Amino acid sequence: ETEEAPVPRVAVVVCLIKGKRVLLGRRRSSLGDSTFSFPGGHLEFGEGFEECAAREVKEETGLGIKNIELMTVRNNVFLDEAKPCQYVGIFMRAVLADDDQVPQNVEPNFCDGWDWYEWDALPKPLFWPLENAIMAGFNPFHT
Ligand code: 8DG
Ligand code: MG
Ligand code: MG
Image 1: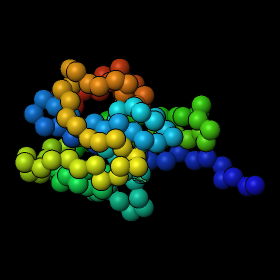
Image 2: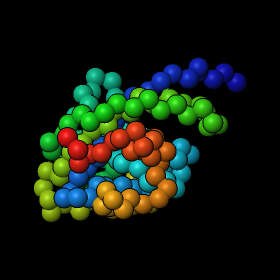
Image 3: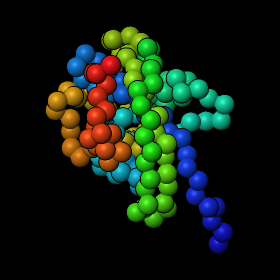
Image 4: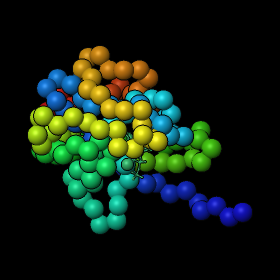
C-alpha cells in the first residue's frame, strides 16, 4: 500500500460572536472526537479566508455571517494521530448577518449540534488547538 507523505494544510476556523457568546459544536471526527470547536474547515484552492469562513459556516450551521476579520494564525501539529497531520489554523471572527438566525446541525455525522456559550463559561473539553490558542491569549472580545 502506498501512502502520500503528509503535508501541512490550511484550515479556516470561525469564532462567531453573538453578544457575549460564541458558537461551538461538539465534534464527531477522528480528530478531536467529543471536544468542542468552532465551525471551520479546509481552505479550498483559489479561496480567500473570508470566503472560506462564510462557506464553512454556511455548510456546517446554515448561518450567514458578516464583518469577517482575521484574528490570528496558529500552527497545529497532530503527531499522535493514526494519520499524523498538520494544520495552519487561520482564526477569523465574525457576527451573524441577521441576528434572528438559529444554527442548524447541517452535518450531524460530524457534529452533535451547535450552541452559544459565554466566553467565561466555555464547555469542556475544548478541541486542543482551541484550548492552546486561548492559553496563548486568543480572545475574540479583545481587539
Ligand atoms: P471540510 O471537509 O469541510 O473542508 O473540513 P472539515 O471536516 O469541516 O474540517 P474540520 O476538522 O472541521 O477543520 C479542519 C481542521 O482545522 C481540523 O481538523 C483542525 C483545524 N482546526 C484547528 N482549530 C479548529 C477549530 O476550532 N475548529 C475547527 N473546525 N477546526 C479547527 O486547528
Ligand atoms: Mg468543520
Ligand atoms: Mg466543513
